[in-house]
Image 1 (spheres, helix red, strand yellow):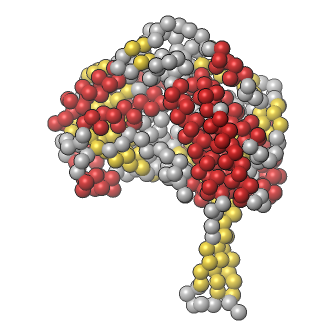
Image 2 (cartoon, rainbow, N blue to C red; image 1 turned 90 degrees about the vertical axis):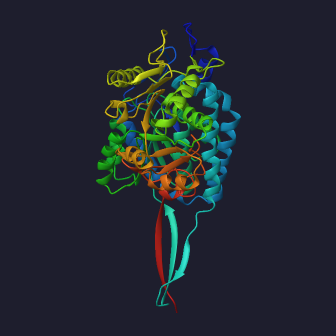
Image 3 (cartoon, rainbow, N blue to C red; image 1 turned 180 degrees about the horizontal axis):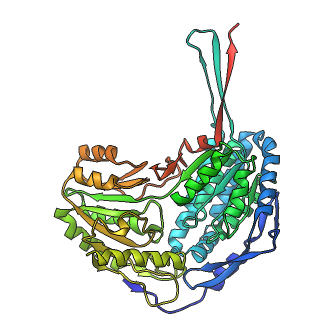
Length: 496
């Protein structure tokens, strides 16, 4: 592993890009300060410097935002589908035109290497292109009752004002994955981005305004205290849907609040992804998949491979190859050339990773590479492979959310399926095998919403993203993604 250890400051290019971002609350088509006048700091996790301050919204701002969304909903719902489609398509084009600047903002506030950030910008934009095409394909149905006496006419209508809450780890894509279908369906929105990474989301607002989104359709309030904003939205009686991406713990609390008004809910929550390598796997391909599934976003992804189960007969070779690959990655400020692994998002995240590794080592795990933080400013942790991990280790039951790959041996298909499913979560699983029958058998047996078969990447705007069990409710993306923002209406028409 190589580490860029020289301390440095945030580049002027990054600061210039950030200076173009409006950092107030965006309500009823206007930027302004929070009612309290308060602001909070945004840090560069690679340098620990303050790079911006953002308006710190509260209940008064939240109330203004949800009242605006409620007032505008009827007119927005009546907007022609093609008009909504065109807005999204123009926004897609604008995002791609500004890909470099948006990526630099994202890297500076969140830490991921610039190459990855550019990839996320393109991924985020694709949700707008995908849902621009879905907006004009919202269908219905007409059938006959069994007795032939009535026609059954089914149409779809926007669910109404939506509460959108996004995490910090994919600060642009998680916003477009929710905003895209809401716009396509004809729903107004109140949106709270993550306070650790608000700048990418705020930059998106001006793009949507430039693309022609009408006043009041999207209202954005950032805050250091999420409950002071999201709580009033859910209690307002105006919002008809909540879409949240984040921890299961927070998701459960939001579901409890949403239940008070019987709100539609979409929840993309935590994960504990198993990554299974069978004895017949193509090991080079499996290692490639493990690097992709583990190291994307420095491991800070709900889809990250959290538990790597490798057949005992190939575990030694797999662990050695994986350690060689991770040890060759360059760690440093993601804005610098040649960096593979950026910092974790904050000090608390770094502390958690260190605690999980220390617990595993104390319980007998061997450190094949990494296992420590580099001696430099920023919230960095070295890419790490742990072999011989005890099943009772803390990192077997918690999301690691860092660049740590624990490798656990198994002896049979039945055993590894049982181990893989022994978790409250069920977002995604990965398996590597060249046995066709086994690939479908294990895919069916895994209690997850998504499976990566001989691949470490599953996310795609054209596919339904989501999980089962404690990993959430509903799906985002794909043809079903827009359905989460639509209600069905049935009209009975007697035949005459």
